[in-house]
Image (cartoon, rainbow, N blue to C red):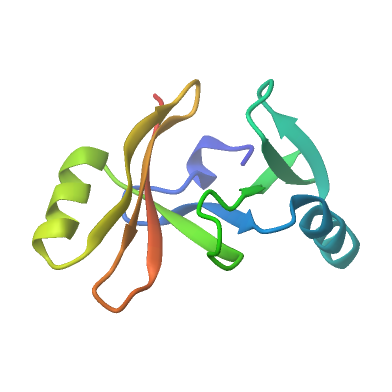
Length: 126
């Protein structure tokens, strides 16, 4: 996103991530379907950004849990990733990827709600 005022705020979706069983195939599909370009993120991370023009629209990585299906995960901006993860667990959700820092990006975690739906939480680096 290019303008500060256009950036998502707390409680809004702020990032989209595809965990794919075949990253190369996914990149080709979305490039052809939507005209997205790809750009590796960081050296040796295995993470690739999807770009529409100069704007980052999402990312793709290999599914970290073998046997899980490919899926899109939306990330909601929160003020405190750790506190939000703890609250999710108290409400019957599950923290499937505990909070961790992504250098130069922010702090993230992935949760599963009591229905089994995955959602990411994210606090961008200031």
